[in-house]
Length: 177
Image (cartoon, rainbow, N blue to C red; front, side, top):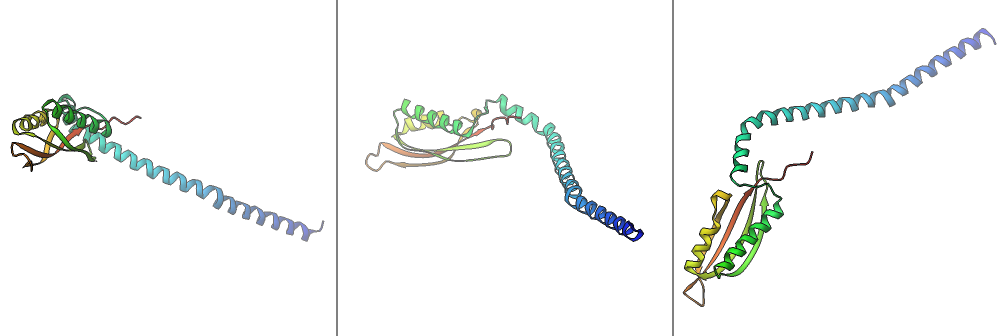
């Protein structure tokens, strides 16, 4: 092999090596670095969120403990709505009230607790309706009447028709880790 061919072979080998390194750098190394940087950024953001949660924990823990001690139970929204609706039905039936309508209203999620709502329409004697209203308005159970409309029944003036919206605050279930 002549001297010229040796130089050409060396130049081709070096240029092929440089091209392979350039391709390897752009195809393998840079994407890995970008992936590592994005993972680092995400981890730093999660760390800041966790530190913020821990700093708020000291402030909010007494309130959450008070809610749990005061009878506010942890439950799912559907379970709380159905239990609230069943309680209203049971209390109305015990007082001989006629249930005209019963609807579950869309719940309102909150940051620390959720609010479930039920709409109820009943008719009955005034004293029975008032007894029913006082039995279901339970502040200690975080259950209150938020809207009420009372009107006399069209065909019988001794009876009244009441439409209420009752709301209950619940703690959402703890998230599984």
